[in-house]
Length: 63
Length: 335
Image (tube, rainbow over all chains, first blue to last red; front, side):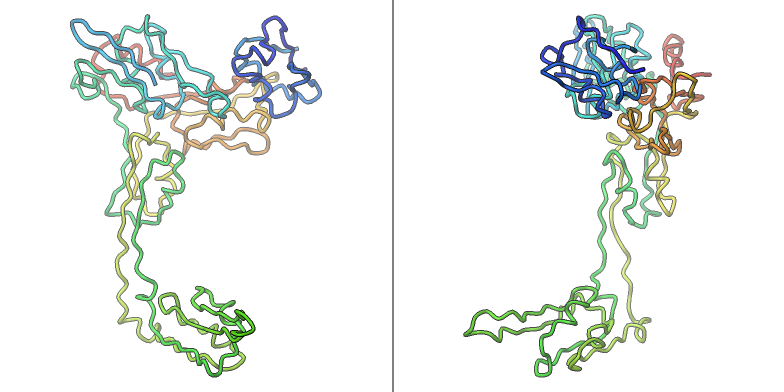
């Protein structure tokens, strides 16, 4: 099922208060940094929703 | 760490100590003006963000002190004209306990190792080993070939051997000595010696009636300001010397649905925020050992699946004299 990122709300690492908190929180490698931006790897997502709950910009939701 | 202070008819000051805070959110649950907010406890617990676990809107806070009496961990305190309301007769107080009975403690130190909050101060004085054994040992320098069998096998490491040549001028740099403060007269050295160079006799068994075993002395105490009443110490204590009274009684369950299931090792948010070290991921699911849980509820807010169900049936908050305060504080209970 994975997650999706609202590009308008997302801080795109540089403007994220924690410089990519979702990347740091996800231990499954389902959210990674690619070309300086946040990138989702759906096949790695375990639907734990930790990123959804903790995104400081509330930019992540269920796909 | 924050302070909210106002001076008028009285001087009121609310102090928050982040070191004592466990991020349970009880203060925010009881605040009548919704001035307290629980921060991102999972990223904070994982060290990804450095900030206080709670924040306050100092403009809306009315400095009533409800949060400070509700906090079972004394992370918030309200002072009125310099006195903490917890020291005033008419304010509520937690009737919790964490005490070590010095008479019963045997100074094993197991509580000290088990405490998840480093809240236990422990020290002990053991007698010198040599005072508990009797015997004689000698090594004959004339017979010894400095092979080192004895030194390698000596269980307490009591034999100090040197057999490495210093130089061609001093190639017989040999010495062997027994440290009698370490030797327990077990006889292993004598048995392995190929030269019959060791004389050893153990009289510990023969003289056991004459060997006074000194009493072990020490100190074990719980630093209340760091204790979260999890009961690890009292559960692990082999002689029941520790008395813990927890703030709440009740239950904590994992209630999974078809859509919402525990993701175990992928998430482990509950385990990370638990101040009691009561949560373990077992077979891919979070398992909470209620013996160690203080029902603070930090894991409830941390769980992104929202499948942890906390039921508090009673609490040890006593001396609630105001009906409106009772109403606010009873929000912490389910029944």
